[in-house]
Length: 346
Length: 269
Image (cartoon, chains in turn brown, red):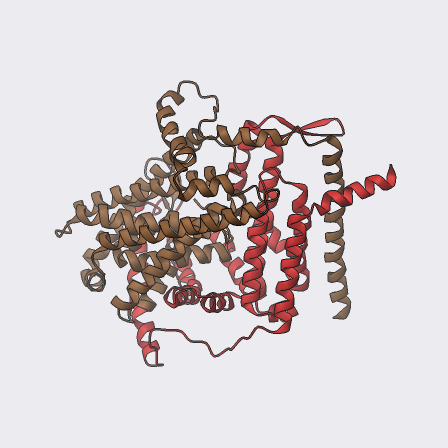
């Protein structure tokens, strides 16, 4: 599911942008050294293939509803983590620009959610060890299932975390998790089965294709993962630091960052980042009996926002409303004016 | 929306981007930077801000009118992708029920304010992102990104994707049509057939990549896609960026909307 710009705070958006940019830079640097030119068109065309494959839908057995391929895991299996990450990044960029899925600031989040976990966690740590050297269809099925489910669960959980850290939505942690994770469990199961079936089909039809690509596949993803993570943490701290400095020079205007930014990269994280999450997991079991939308992780933020309200008078908000009406009217007039001026010119 | 429509839509967005207006002539880098600044400014407004967002509609409206982009087309595309933001945002009025403001006797809850804030931000960010492509063209944005320091391998991915997107989508559409012709009702749309279709599509894609590679080799491909077009930042580009930054600064840090409203209230009081 695509994250949207409107739900993001600048701090979360830029942090994830920095993380994604770091991984993209790292992956392309690594690839440039290790692949031959033949891979470049192949990767690009496979990105287009994912789009095309998403157009073809199928009936999910037993439910009657229709589904389609998401494609992250299959790319990782075919191309290896680095190349697959770049292809996924380009697919999501085109989706963001052409279909307006998500938006440009959320691009970092979306690439991270849908690319990073599939390529750098699920593929090297789950798929590869599970499949081993044997490459038997049954093992491929199990490995794809587990890795697709894991990747999608982590991605969905990241959407939840990014939304909560941004603080634009009131949705409590536990409700949001219960909304997102089961949906993505279903998607993951379907994705796993379909991925395995396609891989096995290609294996049986043209086995040389997958092997040919495997040769150019760089090894040793575990070592580089650490480096990537280290870069990400450094970048997160740097962006966080820069943003909170920027915010503190305008203490009245930019309420957005301080506590969330510092909560992202430094020690006080225990207060904001991990603690509510753990609390949410703790309350998970206690949550179901009394399903009354009790805010679990979000409580402190609400309290912070509350004191702002008594200070606002009726007169102020009325003035705001009138002003907004006038401003929007003026913008419409400007737009229509330019339009008619252009038309007369032609 | 069916995929035929979706496909038609990207084609249309693409065609719009090759129009001949002064906005289309600006340096792509200037437009990319201005758009990103605009997005960050819009998103930086606090959760409950509604009225201060109004002036920001001037930016997409100007892009739309000066760039001669049909309003309906953009509005339609924004509405099509809105469900996720609405789905997440609609919980705010349900959960955040404290009264925030009273407008002529009618209490408005904080949740509705934050919901409207999300919707306005959504409309602003999505329409501006679409307008960037509609006034700049995808290849030009790619070149701009590369000159702004994005890795060239990633940029060449974008180029290939863009080139072959249309080709492969047409191929997929032919496959779908052929399947639909042969499958009455639900038959033939199961997973088994799907896997074969996608498998075939994949094999064809790989073969196509091979042919593309040889064709490119014979044209002197050395692992990079250079451009002949040399773009330089002109005075017009710098003016455009400076104006945008000034516009963003004024409306971000001064409560202009409320000021106008107060002045008008003062006139009639």
